[in-house]
Structure formats: structure tokens, C-alpha cells
Image 1 (cartoon, helix red, strand yellow):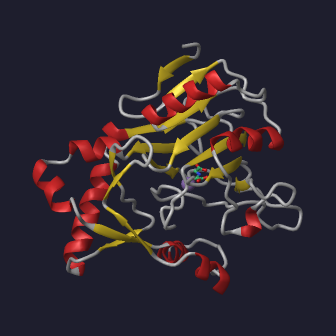
Image 2: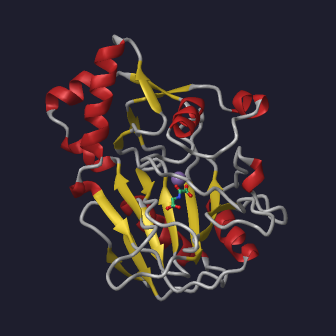
Length: 287
Ligand code: OGA
Ligand code: MN
């Protein structure tokens, strides 16, 4: 096939080299990208120069797009775009979510139908200091951890289900000092707690995943609370072991496409103004 690629880390990720995403992709190239994506969980495309319209058009090829529940941070011109940024406008208000994803998570695992994929495009990234970069994002596969569990543990969790809660996450972020305003009643109503199996087969590839994350998974059902807490901590720690992780050092013009059904990610919040970070995210729904 025609695309040049290289692996990003042993267990997760590929870079697609020298592909200009501002141009419409022909069907054969798009099918090849989907195949690579299903295999590797995240795809990196460097040196892109995309308008908002091009970012949205590319995203739409993967499926219908979602607007995030935090409506304040959507671009008013393009509500499909969620602004992820620490920048303030001239009135001192945040132009985007400043602390998005600073705990491990799969996007919208708190919905009954978690979104399929996200496309995050870097518009401004803090300058590195020699080798030292700022505002990296770490990605971990959910497939490798499931496969690496002991047979006993696989048995133990085989039919277990867990609660995922956006509200619990939100309250936790506030107690940890996030400056976000409280969720409105409407936002709460849009995000009731949901239940997912701990072992969730990927809807496209059928591969089993260990579908837990430290942000949203709060409780394993049919277990005492203390036992659930202990097992969740164990599984969450296991899933983010270095061998399952790729840590991305962003450059302006990078676009990363990730699969929320087979991976999770973490934003590293190790920068502050006057260092500026601005990325645009689109989110593709289950379809
Ligand atoms: C997101 C997210 C991570 C980052 O946009 O979903 O988690 O590093 N972002 O900005
Ligand atoms: Mn995220």
C-alpha cells in the first residue's frame, strides 16, 4: 500500500509520514488509514496546515461529530470544534478548557455510547527548552493490558461491570483546585452515570480491552465498596504501565487521531502562562 509509516512505541501508535490532510483523501488512502488506525490505536500526522473547515471535513470522514457538553468552550463559528487551551481572552476569560484531560481517561467513557475517536490538532505549543518539552500528552493502549492480565484476573473480571461518572470526575477536579464553574442542572441531566463492562470488546476489531480509567470509572458493581476500590486501583495502575504507553511531544502542526475504544490518554499540565498552548479537538461519535 502507498503510505509511509513508522511505529511510535511497541504497544501503541503509528506515524503516517508526508501526508497532506488539507487535501481530500481518495477512498483507497482513507481505507488504508482506517486499517492502520484500527491496528495501532493512535495515528500521528506531522507538519499539517489545516483550516477549521478542513479539520472538520477530515473528521467527518470517520463519522458524525459530537458537540461537547461544556458548550462554553466550543468555537462559536464551528461548534464541532472544542478548544483546548490555557489562553485567556482580552477580558481575562479562558478561551478553552485549560485543564482538559489531566487524569488518565478515554474521551466520553461516561456516556452510554462513548465516542469513537478524537482528532486533536496543535495550533500553539509552548517552546521546548532544549530536550525538555512542555504540555506532552501520554497515550496508553487498552488492548495490551487486557492481554497481559493473569488468567486468574481475566476470570475474576470476565463478567464484571463498572460505573463511569462524569459528575464524580468533575467534583473531584474541583476539590483538587480546578477553577471550572460547577456543572449546571442541564449538564448533569445530559451526563447521568452509566455502566460499561470491565472487559469491553472493541466494536470494530472485536479485540478485548480493559475498559477502565482513573477519571471516570468509579465503582465495580456486585462487589463490596472496599473490594471494588482496591481492584479498580490495581487495574488502573496496571493499565498505565510504561510498556503500554507512548508519550507525545507536540509540535505545532501535529494532528493526532486516537481511538477512545482501544486507548486512553493523559495531558501533562507542566506549563503555565506566559507559555501558551492551543489545540482544537473534534470528536467522532459511535456510528
Ligand atoms: C482531549 C485531551 C489532552 C491534551 O482533548 O481530549 O484530553 O494534552 N487533551 O490536551
Ligand atoms: Mn481527552
